[in-house]
Amino acid sequence: MMETTMLDKLRDRATRILAETGRCTLSTTGPAGLQASMVLCTGQGTTLYVLIPDTSDHLFNLENEPNVAVTAETWRLHGTAAIVHDSPELFAADQRQWHTIVRVTPVRLHILPAQCGSAHQAETIDFDG
Image 1 (cartoon, rainbow, N blue to C red):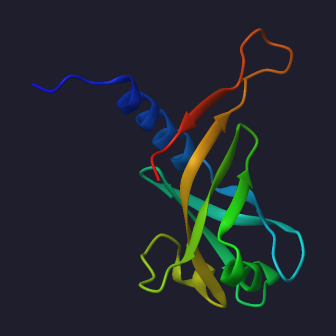
Image 2: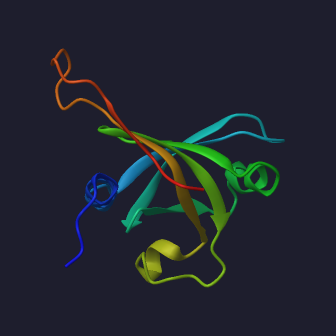
């Protein structure tokens, strides 16, 4: 029987947190300047997938700079983005129309305290590259 490590527990927690989120803010930078937009998202394991309109300047930025920041109410994620060409069935067909799916591989996930002013500190999970 395998022993569960602290890293396994943290990855399980990250998986649950990302799976619970349906909308987030994606931030990119590059030739189109700093861009920040609310987008649909879904987690699959520790990977986050976001749905970006085909006309978005995010896509232009991602061609040159894959590092992104993604935020939600309870977490912040820094990661590396890549356009998904083998479009997995992560979003409904009507949502995917005129959109591009982008996979965000996490580098660091900050889980924010549940309540403002609580004694709890933000937790950070670092992922292997």
